[in-house]
Image (cartoon, rainbow, N blue to C red):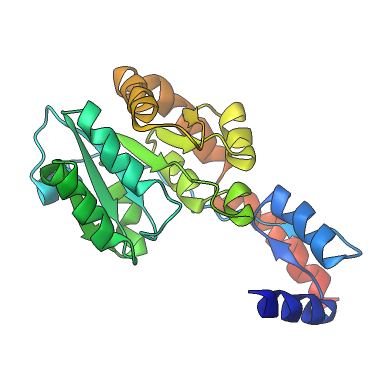
Length: 245
């Protein structure tokens, strides 16, 4: 990692422009790399879409209509709160955890689900084509974006899954980390929870969202109209024009 950082500092001077996906990332890289100009921010957000809710996840996993689905999508790795999500199910007997994605932690999640006696409610589904992701996401009841601050990068995290949940109009349980919290302060389509919360505290956040889903979905709809690629496209076009001059 130190070697990669050295290469980055050495080579960045040859870049015409530095582009990052978050405001806090821009400040951090300008400081660390001693850049004369602040990096350009282009958010990693999906194209705007009007999702249609269906029972795709329920059919795939055999989940009954009286039960709820918490969905995690992305790389199955440490720092994503997946083991805590498994623990949380003990307090939510009518809730299932679905995981869309692959990664090194998948076997550990499955083993931990067995240890916690909730294996029948933890579904590891692997990856799906990105072109289908929104439809899968829209069939969930709550999106999981609870990031653990295991590194400085994670502390600054602004995951694209946060915006994908909003685009699917799905309420989100997310870490109260600075960049994520700023989004949820503007558009409260989810519950920000301390990144050191225990399983019971996270279960309470999920329960609050399940008790009043439409309020969160209305805010998600507003967030989706703000955090979409179409709103970022003018920034990209200006960058292309700048580089072509």
